[in-house]
Image (cartoon, rainbow over all chains, first blue to last red):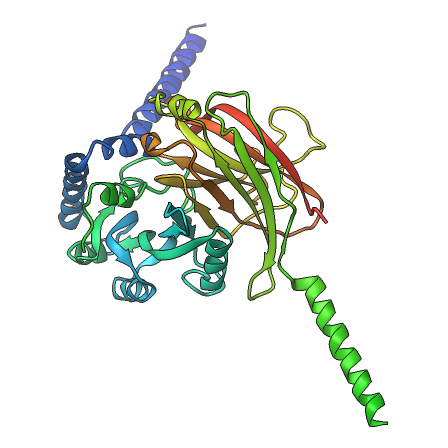
Length: 208
Length: 204
C-alpha cells in the first residue's frame, strides 16, 4: 500500500512538473499580433517614428549579441517608390531571399491607391507580364515597389539598415522574438509583419 | 497543284491557330452583381467576375475578382469597431459538403498574386479545413488594417489568383468578414461573416 502511494506521489509530481515546465517554456515569447502593430503606428508621425526607434533598438541588440550569419524573417519598408532595377540590385547586393513583394499602383480615372502583392515564380523575382496583366484588368497603373518580405542574414541587415532606400527593417514577426503560428514554414511569407508604407505616405514621411 | 498545296497549308495553319485559341486564350466570365446586404458592415453593392489565363509555362490560373462599395452607414459600422477589422475573403467551397468544417479543397492556389484597393491591406491565405488542410491553399483574404482610412462610395477591389490543378467543377464564395485577433487561440478569427455571392468555375 505504502509503495503504491509513493509511486502515485512520484507520478503526480512528475506530471505537474512537466506541465509547469511546458507552461513556463511556452510563456517565454509573446505571440505575434499584426493588429497591435497596425494600431501602434496609426497615431500619426510621432507614433511611426517611435515605432521605428523601438525596432532599431532590437536591430542594435542583435548586431552585438547574435551571430552574423543568423537569418531573420523581416518586412522591409522602403522610404520611396522603388523601381524594378533598384529592387534587383538590392537583392543581389544584400543576399536577400525574397518571399513576397508589395507594390503601389494607381487606379486610372479615380486616382485611387492600389496595393499588389506578388511572389517569386517561374525563376523570376515576380512574373512581370502577369503582374502588368493583373493591374491592367483592374484598370490600374504600376507606380513602384513599396516593401518586401524576406529572409536575410544579420550581417546584411546591419549593412542594409544604412541604405537610404530603406525606412525600416522590421523583424517583429520573426520566431526569434515571437511565436507566430501563421509562419510555419521558414520559406513562406505567411504571417508577415505589416509594412509601414501607407502610413509614410499619409504622414508625408517619404523620401523625395 | 500549287493552289491545292497552298490551300492545304492554309487549312492546317488555320486549324492549328484556332486550336491554340480554344486551348490557351484568356477569357472573362460574365459578371454577377450583389445588392443590399443584411449585415451592417457589408458593402451594399458588389460585382464579381472570373478571369482565366495561363502563364509563360502554360500553367492554368483563374482569378476571381470582386469590386464593391459601401454606404456611409456601413463605413461607420466598420470604423466604430475598435477590435474588429474588415476582411474580404474569396474561398473555394465544396457544395457537396454542408455545414461547419466542410470547407474542403477541390481545386487550389499555390503561387501568389493579389491586388486590392482597400487601404493598408494585409494579405493572407489558408489551407482549409484547419488545421490540416490538404496541402493546397484554397482561401485568400485581404484585411484592411486601417479602418479609419476606408470611405463610402469608393471603388474597392480584391483580385486573387488560384492555380488550377484539376478541373473538377468548384465553387468560389465571396464573403465579407469582421476579423479579430483571438487572445486565447492566437489566431486571426472571423467574428462575423456575410456571404455575398457564390460562383461556379468553370463557368463555360
